[in-house]
Image (tube, rainbow, N blue to C red; front, side):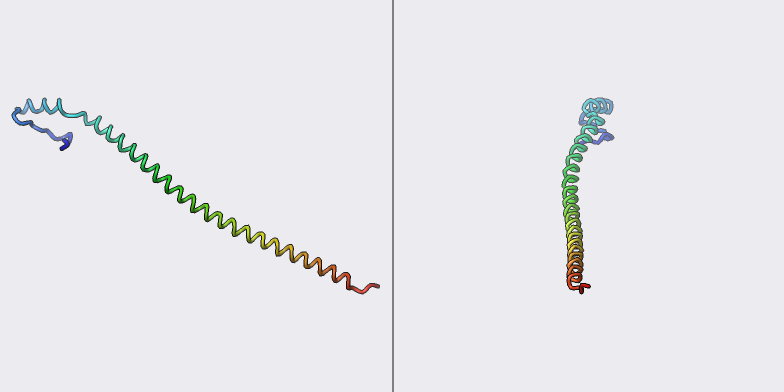
Length: 107
């Protein structure tokens, strides 16, 4: 059983004056205990949060990377397809012009 700092325990067989001097001699330094406990808890919390944050960020970055990859690929496919269609249309126009020029009556 841990004692709270505000608790006064009167050991059996001691008078009131004796109990307070005996309890103060046996009473731990609560500020030191609290400080040590706080330090250990913060260390564990730091380790735990760092691990969880790393895991969460890894998943988030991976998800956004996949989404970005898909968007880039889709846009690149659209651009290449558009460029190919435009180049084919220009080449067909040029071929039609050459054929038209060849079949035109000469004077």
